[in-house]
Length: 81
Image 1 (cartoon, rainbow, N blue to C red):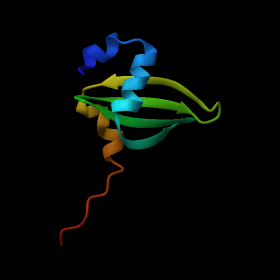
Image 2: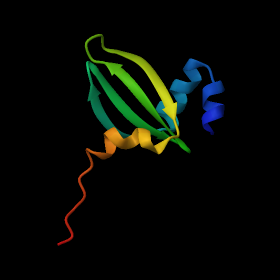
Image 3: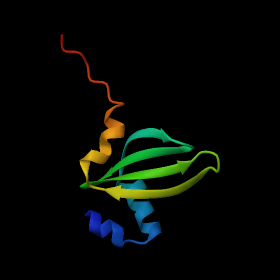
Image 4: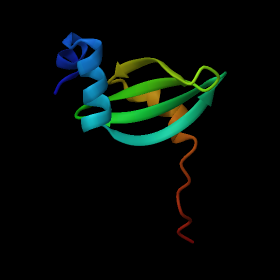
């Protein structure tokens, strides 16, 4: 599935694609939201979960790898000394 095909889907089908085909990668905290990162085929999707309201607030697909920076800072690479 391409990003274009994903954005053409209705909300329910997008949700099924994220949680059915997507691979969970990482979570970060942004204000009162847990932002979960998923890889879906050749793009990524951020899913915003409102912990106070116990609700999925929104999601946003993207292909620009620069948007991965907040997640990459959390990855620790082993030392090769």
